[in-house]
Image (cartoon, rainbow, N blue to C red; front, side, top):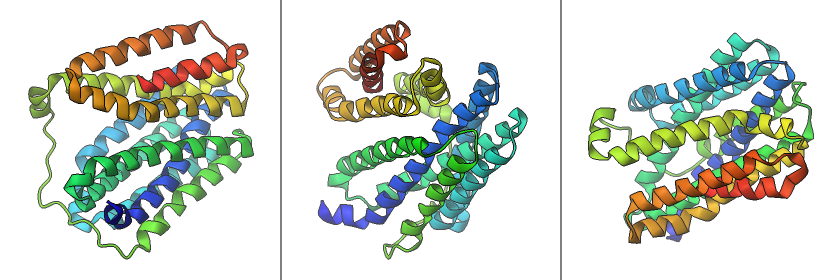
Length: 301
């Protein structure tokens, strides 16, 4: 197991740094949009094109990897994210941000694909589940870390956008300087949603709806925190609470799904999320710790 971790240690470090920059970027973008006086519809449209870019990467990135290899595509995606977040600090127009965020979504999804295929190839089969747990926890802790960087500046100035770009570009170094061998590029690529739906309709639809929920949270959690009367630190705490909840739930829900019907475990998680979200509707910034608790339960769900 130690050898498996050592084989992907540079990948894990790089991913932690990447997620710190990602966490900061996704916190400051909706707050800056709110500060510019843009409407909720504007913010939703910016978030929607981010998801469009994210989806496009699933089709396109494997072809790039096949042509040039994992490391070059990884570096190109990092560069695209850095350019995107810096442009957001320079041009405060809704239409422009839609383009910038589409590029960011494309790049981060492609980076996930590279990371996960790399991890899958380099992890021994008997420790693959453990390694992906390490990967997920690294992602969540990195994202939490990035969120708290927001306290170092003002979203209405370029400072936090520049900090996000610096952190993102720093993720290149562990990968670029690693002595470990890189994964073998795929010999063929394909994307068959119809087959996936046929094989597992519950997982397909559940994942689709989870994406809807995650997208709303990603684009509006910082806005919700600000309008609820929470400070910048309070908003970071709220987002961290959701992430901590998802970390806590990884093992018990995963094990429960091994012993019980997975569909029933999903229903239980959904019911938990509905109750907690309903509780959250009744709260505001004056109930700070209740907000954190309900957010943590939503993260678990």
